[in-house]
Length: 482
Image (cartoon, rainbow, N blue to C red; front, side):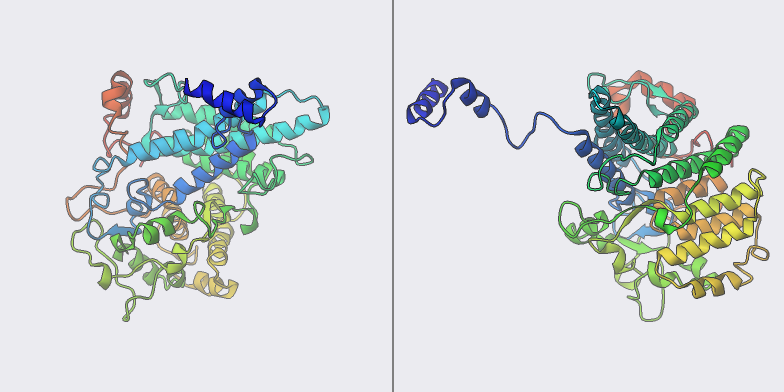
C-alpha cells in the first residue's frame, strides 16, 4: 500500500512521465552497480594482491615474523609460530581467493563474454586477458607456497563450499601452462588495460611481458631441486624471452596518501596503533653488522642512542622502548609496495648460472643483485661498490657455498618482501632461520589450513592433510627438498 501511494503521489506531482521508468529508478541502488567493468575488477584484484603481500598485520600475514626480520613484543603467538591462534591462514586464504582471484575471474569472464566487433581490438582484449592470467599465476603460486595443497580445479565456485584440494605440483604445472598462454598472447604493439586501470605498469604491455617472464624464472628456481629438468626449461625460456633488466621494471604500486589506498603498514602501525607490537630481531641486525651493511640505515630506525639493539626472536619480554624499530619511512602512507623486483631476478640468475642452466658469471649477477638493492633503497652506487669489495661479501671470498652466499644476500635484499624471504630461505636452507625461544618450535615449513576447513570441508581437508603428511607447520611444500 505504501509503495502504491508513493508512486501515485509522484505521478500526481508530475515528476516522471512513465510508470515503468519510475519503477526502474526506484529499484536501482546507485551505490551497488548492476554491471561492473572488467577494468574495475582488474584494478581491485591487483590492489588487493599487493596489499596482502605488503600487509604487516599479524592477523593477516606472518611473513616478516616467520622470515625472522621482526619479532613481537606483547603478543608473541605468531613469533612463536602459532598460526592457529588468530587463524591467519583463514584470513590469508580469504584475502587471496575472494579479494584477488575472484575479482580476476570475473574480469576474465566479462572479457571473454564481450563480442569484439572490430578485429583491430582483438589484440587489446588478448593483452588484457594475459594480464589477468599473469596475476592469477602469481596469486596461486603464493597460495601453494604457503599451504602446499589448495582448492584449484574446483575453486571460486560460490555454490561449492566443499571444493577438492589439488596437490601443489599439479597446480604448479597448471599455472605454468597458463603463464605460457599469457606470454604467447602478449602483443606489445597493442594496448592492454588503460594507464589508470593498471596500477602496476600503467598499461605498458612490454613491461607485463618482462614481469611474466620474471615470474616464470621464479617458478623455475622454486622447482630446481624437485623437478630439475622442468626447472631448467622454464629458466632458459624465461631468460631468452626477457626478464627484468633494471629497477625500472619492478612490479611496484605506489600507495596513496588518501584512504583507503594508503600503505597497509601505515594503517596497522599508525591508524590501528600497533607499531609497539614489533621490533627488529638481533638475528637480522647481527647479519647486517657482520658485513658492515649500510642498508641498516634504510631498514632500521635510529631510536636507540647507542646503535641497533634487536629483540630475541620468539621470546617474551622484548621491550619496544628499549629495542630497534623499523625505519619510519616504511610506515609512510605512500611508501611503495613491491611484489617482484630486479634484485630478486639478478640473484636468481646467479643461482641459475651456478646450477649450469644458463651461461654467464654468477659473481656478476650477484653483484648486480646487491647494486639493484642499494639503488632501490636510495643508497649510492659507490656505497654498493665498497660493500661488495669486502672479503665477507665478495662472491669469490665470502663464506659458504653458492646457496649460502646468494641466499644470504637475497635475504638481506628482501627485507620488505617477507613472503619471498621466508620462502627462499625454506628452499635454499639459507640463511638458517630460527627456533622460537619461548617454546622451542622450529621455523615453519608451511602455513596451516584455515581453522574452519576441518569442520566445513572435512573429507577434502583430511585427504589434503594426508598427502602433506599432516596439517602441520612441519610438513614441507613439495618443492622443499632441504
